[in-house]
Amino acid sequence: MGSNNSRGEGMALNKKSIFFSITAIALITITIFSLTIYTKYRLRDKVMVTETRINSMNNFIDDVEKDVERGIYISGFRALMSMEQYITDNGIFLYDTNFCFEEAFLNGTINNSQMGLMNESTFINWTKRIKEQAIKLDIITDFNINKISIYHEEPWAVSIAANITLSIEDVKKTASWQRPLYITTNISIQEFEDPLYVINSYGRVTNIIIKTNITDFIGPNNETTNLKTHVNNSYYIESNTSPSFLMRLEGNLSNSSYGIESLVNLEKFQTQEVPIRDRSVVDYIYFGDQTTTNHNIQDMPSWFKLDGEHLETYECEDLTE
Image 1 (cartoon, rainbow, N blue to C red):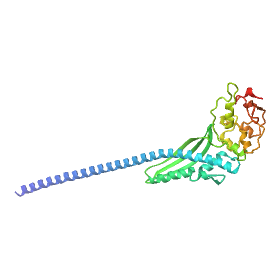
Image 2 (cartoon, rainbow, N blue to C red):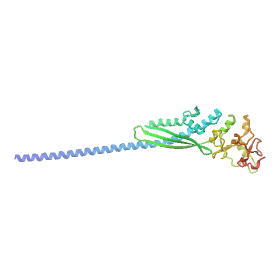
Image 3 (cartoon, rainbow, N blue to C red):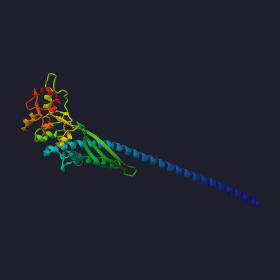
Image 4 (cartoon, rainbow, N blue to C red):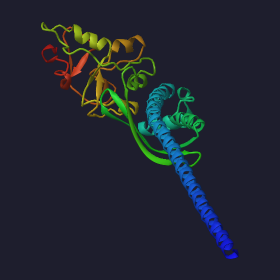
């Protein structure tokens, strides 16, 4: 009897041990599975948050590029106006157009003189405002301006090119980039003043750059109506024998592939009591010291003279006196 009871108790204990073992294994399995699921979802959530943040930063970069391009145009336009204002105020041409432009564009000064038009409008001011907006989004930005240049690619506009390195980083160190930006924008030169007139008239006469819409200067019966309209308004044409707009800011009268020229209306000079010269009225010749053979033109004022090289340009070959 005793032996049977002991055997029964042993079997019961074995069953309980097996049950507890199975239960323990099950609990461990459930715990491991739960931890695995938790970790998996936690990692997935972290990845999703990171992806969302990266996408937001990418969108921010796209917006920054648009804002930078807008800033280059606005600051560039004001810098050009400031350069012309400097010429008018000081009665001198610029010594280096590109250098003066960069100084005004970035610092708001020309030859260390503060320009009022650049007040809170420099490109540095523009990038500062972008940084302030970025920090509100927990994004740190920095702009390294490598090079700013201004040049012509066509006669009627100037191009501004900016080589910038954009650094961007999330405040939580989620992601960071360094991205080169090469941005160009074009500014029309029409409606700007021609500095050649300002300097050579002692600031008394100005001439706004307006591209002529006249295609035939002389009419079918040798009428000079269109030519007179062109001269009276000192409109401009393209000319590769003339200086470009940027060259005019320096008083450089050499020729350029992007040159423009006007015919000087000497009546405006006479009205302002500016002494007139007996020269071809093609502006870069009139304001320069080039020696030319000049011709009076029928049905045009006595002061109106054209050099031989421009007779064909203005269709006056058969109207010389």
